[in-house]
Image (tube, rainbow, N blue to C red; front, side, top):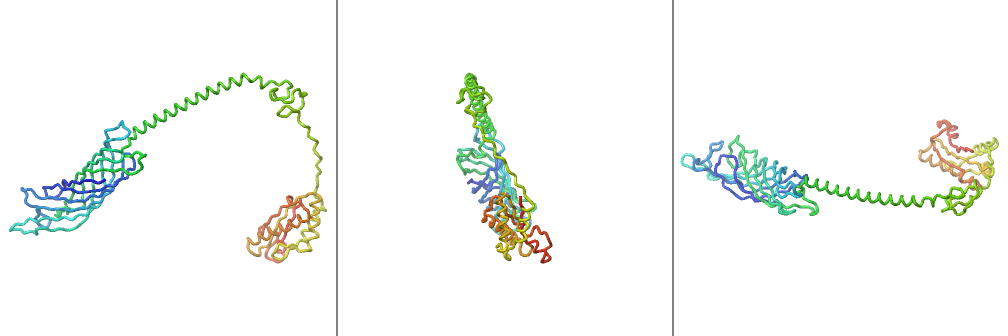
Length: 407
């Protein structure tokens, strides 16, 4: 928001102010309808002197001065509160009153003109550079020209945490200066969205309420029409009900859908009213039991089962007993669970893979001999289920095994 600054006053020993022009730029983020954060930059020159009644002022060192001119640049962050409007019944406000307060830094370079006479000479001019915290407080009014442009008029009083803004240190007095400004404000952002500071929340709520009321009324009217149509459909369905419910042969299928009328009483029919085919009697189920002889074949296969060291390759002398197990599975259609186990020599992952591979190797051998693969389950447990201690060679030998469970 570019502004034209007019320095008009302040607190120091000089009582005659000279109006001057300044410049400024503001950037504001509107957070809600009534509040926004604003970053301000202002610059210019503040001038003043003494009146004819008081020919000079004196600083803390006793030096006399009759005029000053201070160049300044100021940056401040302020909160802007929109507290009133004159358009409460419009969706967009046209006039907005606001207050602002903030904190910043002012950089200033005062130049003072000394008061000289024969009894007390003072340097004609002197200057220095300094900076201090500043607290701007102000108020103003905005006039909306369009959705994107507004005229901003206001007044700010700037309280400085220093005593030398006018170049004359009069501690403990602190300096402050004021300015009135007029500027043009431009709103950035999508044109489809209303600017928050101009949108009237009261009217927006009222419009939303009226819109929702109209939507609900349309919904009620549509539901009423749907109910009227439903009642008409139900009346038509009642009128035709007799045609769809008559069942002359009593088979549970109405005459309208019955493709086999005259079905004898007690005969079961399908959905078309035709007799159902009589299912043949189920074949007798022969139960096969696991005998002691069957278990003996399995135990012998377990005793004779050996693999090459560290591999899943079955040694040839194990084949005859495995062949008898395969023939048993074929003859009696048994199911078989194979569980591979190892000792604790080697890593957990390697032992798990080896136990699984050995169980799968036995399964593949039995399937190759004609056993039903779907009835054989092969699982590896690695070293997780020992049946003896792994601290002795004998115990580790017992733990290296493939268990057969026949069922």
